[in-house]
Length: 261
Image (cartoon, rainbow, N blue to C red; front, side, top):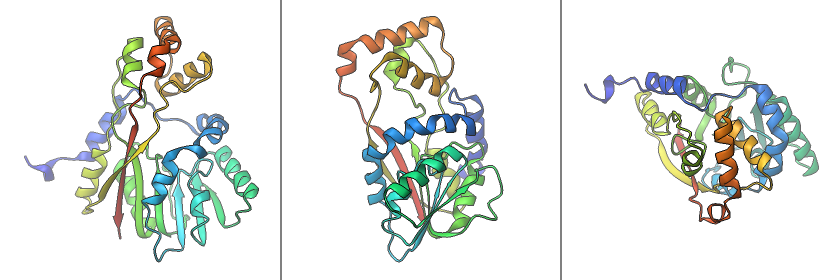
């Protein structure tokens, strides 16, 4: 057997089936939108992403999984037209509010999902999918991004198979099935005949960046679902451990995968 015999997309799908980190519904994201909007615009990730995107000789961009617009709003200052796509109507509503408050008028919002046909979506010189590729069929999603891009594609995917800090998981005694790591994407693209560039974005680790325990518990529920009473008590001990909270936190890394058409 050699690498050409391996179906990386099927391996990716199998890992998605068993992972602890289950996909979120549109309703989940609608409920999460306001909280996300209050935090995401200040992240160092935004400028790090922006600095790595080559907009030379480009006038249009499609932002897939745009959320409340942390990137779309920035790209709108650099390009003639930005198409901002999300399947959460609440995310799009907040994006439109943010654009209005900043007097940005060249963003067009589109409600659509990864799972539906993209025939009616516009093509753009650049297509980005920032931290939005928690899809079941990765090969299909990558083909859609590639088809909609006139010149360049940029996506990011978390390095490592967990959205929760390993030390926190150990403290509450929870064992998880990790999600697929970014390297699946690289290998799927290779099988598609695409040789991508790979860079890494260093972002904040918000391990215990909460003012009260309930907010911390809710963040864990968002990631790993229901917790037992013993796990909740372990989580409380972590939250109340001042020394643990003050420990230097390792940054979170995102793989930035890009290619030219």
